[in-house]
Length: 226
Length: 100
Image 1 (tube, each protein chain N blue to C red):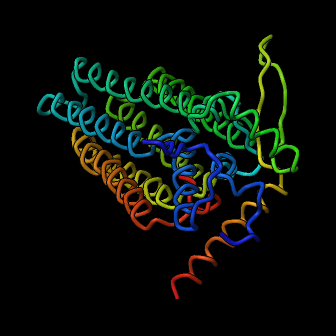
Image 2: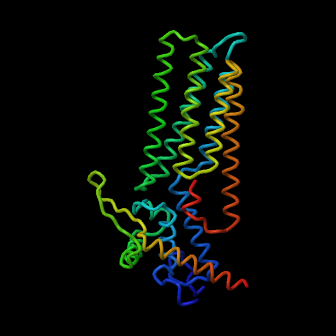
Image 3: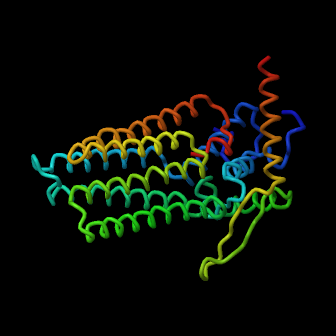
């Protein structure tokens, strides 16, 4: 009991293996504490799409060309909840950071906002011009997915995140196919293929994180930024 | 322990500071409270180590204001990043040498 317990901040030299572990743990903490957790975001959006679109599909009366109002309300709440979770999580995680990444992240966030503002106004314009209800519903979904898919591709380029290329491309294809099918099949495909795509991405990210930790390597910050 | 490892970095507390800042992209900075939270160090202890790293030219300290509140941001200098890369390369070489 006479020797003091080693403290994490004392200056005692470590052997090389311990030292590498100290580096690895510090860098893991740094990333976990300053970048959004992709797994949480994918799980949130997967659940929102699966639940929201299934409700639209189930809420479309047989032979009808539009879901009922209550189904749209549930869908809107699911999407709004996912937006709030994403924004709060991202802002909290990146608080206290400054520089290139923070600026890129802020501009990326504003791109989403502007994209969906335009989507809302375009859809309102189509409805005002007398487009049939099914056409308005299909356009609303297709334009939203076009924004999502293209911004994921942009994110893949900005953050050098290769799996995100797959998700962006997948969402563009699913949206195109869903628009060809027509209501209510559109919503079933969006729920299963679109929501499912997010959930698969969440599982892929989780596997990547577990593998990185098990491998025990020092990840290169320039290639492993999620 | 071999003598050729960089003595500025080869102290656990400063190694953790440098490793944390090296996890950021180039051109990114962390605020002092954020760094303190990530490292779970006391403000006084962290300040002491940051001063040594700044004196060695490894860390850039930027003092600024957010509104009326003073804020301090920390980043690795190119020299600090190079020193960290050399340090990890030397460690890895030592491990490989020990293993063969």
